[in-house]
Amino acid sequence: MAKIFKGLKTNIGYYPLDDASAEIRLLELLPSGTTSVEKSPQIQCRLAHVSLDDESEYTALSYVWGQRGSSHFPSSVLSEIRVTSNLEAALKHIRKESESVMLWVDAICIDQTNNQEKNIQVGRMGSIFEKAMETIVWLGPAADESDLLLEIFEETLPDARLMDMKTKSVATEVARAVAFPSQAAAALFRREWWSRVWVLQEFI
Image (cartoon, rainbow, N blue to C red; front, side, top):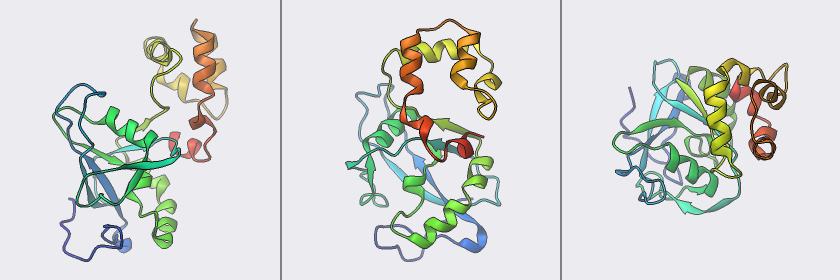
C-alpha cells in the first residue's frame, strides 16, 4: 500500500525514503484523456512510496537519459524536477487515455541530489527490476522504419529469441529468422540504448 505523506519534504520536494522498510518511490502517470500522443496535454503525475517487501504492481522503465532539458512536470510534488526530452517522449507514449500507470523511473523515483539515497537505491536496482510486473525498453521515437521492423519482430520471433543477449548477437539472431529492411535494422541496433552500462542488468 502506498504511503500517505505527513513528514517534511527535501529541498526539491521529495519525502525521505524509509530504508529500513526497503522503500522505493513509484511514479503514478496519470491518464492523458486522449489517444493522440502528439496532441496530448502536459504530463500529470504524482509519487508514492512502497516497500519492495510488498507485492506492489508496477512497470520498470529502461531507457537512455539523454540531454537534460527544460521540460518539467506541472505537479505539486514534481514541479522542480526537470526531465530529459527522451524521458518525456517515453512517458507520453506509455501513458494511457483513461487509467493511471505505475512506473519505476530512476531519474524521477530516485532523488538525484541526494548521494546517500542514490547509493542505496542503485544497490536495490536488481530487486526493483526483478519485482516489476514487466520492464519497458524505450529505444526512442519511431525513425528509420523502426515501426515496421518491430512489427516484424513481434509477428515472427518468439520472445526468447530476442532475449538471449548473453550468448548471441540479437542482430544476428534476427537476421537468421526473418527477412527485414536491413537499413532499418542497422539503425535500430545503433541506438544509444544498446551501449548503456545498465542494459544487461535491466534486461535480464
